[in-house]
Image (tube, rainbow, N blue to C red; front, side, top):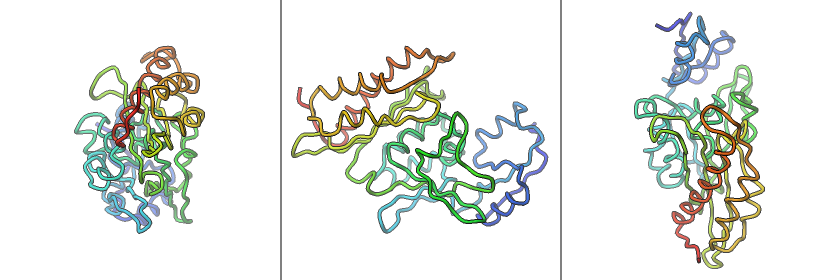
Length: 295
């Protein structure tokens, strides 16, 4: 049984925002795959909930006239990975969220909930960082557009203010057009386990010059928040497509990431794995782009 004081179901965005103002201590629940576990464990016993899963406008994926892709915060992981726009333009995100939990979790869990939980192990986060995603946060007072890189404040803490709701995740056209990417999740079990370490790489190749024109590298569980490896990116941009780039990325990310010791894995182990999965993710991203490395 779940110890819930009251449940309010919103069917429109305005209704949800009004309920949040009327019940400022209530918790917003989307798919419930995280909130209900906390309630069952007694961490949120006696709470009030505002359900937003019936807000249709937050469960859609579309493309703006400028080419930006809009992903509604209530879109389930399964919907994200199977949507044609995602498969065609940002397949790296679909493949990343397809590694969340099992099928049952992916059918109810939402990408917005995954982001707003602020968990450093969230499978969607590294790829959204590498895609330079922006978040549309709305309230009765208006809206804010926040780069996802500024949204994570610390372990389990995000820049979501009182009365605000995440409405859409925006993937800018210039951040995905002409790019290919790959996400690798390292976990102790192959299925239904959270990441011990995750790495998402998005890159663009200059085929004429056989150079790595641009690259974005983000790790999960390598710091208190998802970590963009800007120093490593700078070392790789413009480099010729040969085996040297794999040596560079492997060594550089081990200097840049800062994982911690935990019962899941030691810092030393995560550093070792980090270099390896970064190298493999870059290799696959280049292959998916259509590039080849000279020996």
